[in-house]
Length: 307
Image 1 (cartoon, rainbow, N blue to C red):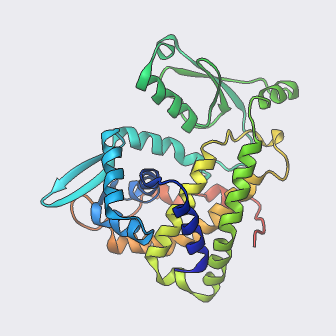
Image 2 (image 1 turned 135 degrees about the horizontal axis):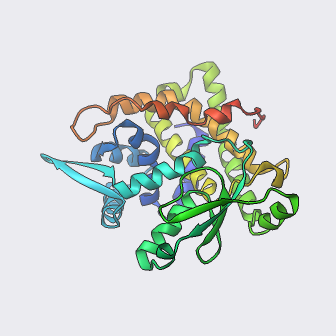
């Protein structure tokens, strides 16, 4: 394992345990496009490479199962896990915001989303689920039963979207609801952490080095990359470009993430093909066609030099 990845792992290990969250990242990024089910030994191999013990992984899976995010099946003595329908819905809703199906630089309209009376009457877990779905769709609450966001994605049932007037005054007033300072700091931190990995991937692409040989390291790097990026991207309202500073850190972070992701794909996918086992105890199926569209729009955007 090369130094940039070791440094990233040290930062991960220094933070409070979020094994359950990384499990969800791994499912959404690598398992869902390949049939959706994965055997426990594959998960344990990944986390062993991160120096996370099997007991911690099993506890995280039990928590996710109890909370309704994953489901477990047994075939003989082997356990297999997949996202629940609830987990799959949240993962698919988040994909455009993580993988840049619509890039930052695409022109967007702001939308006002308003809840119906039946949705406003929800309480407890049902209300929390609506709030989560809206957040995953890129909307920020600014009043009870009302959210602001952009014109991409599907709204949950009972939520109605209205286009916002595009005048400069209206746009500036709405932009005031979104605080971007903390978000910018998070993107800058992401850039600082992962730029050395981007340089190493670029160097090895020319020299056919470590990531072309060590597939498990590529899986670890890809998992941590998307885990860290999604934590920021899903908080980002992705406002129209006209409202953003020209040097917005989110533009650079998105392109940086896409650059590393594409470099890690060959080795990480080869490892999954060789080592991943699905619910029928056989090898994982090939990724779906939609998988290959990840970061496609970003790659068409103007390149920036990070290293």
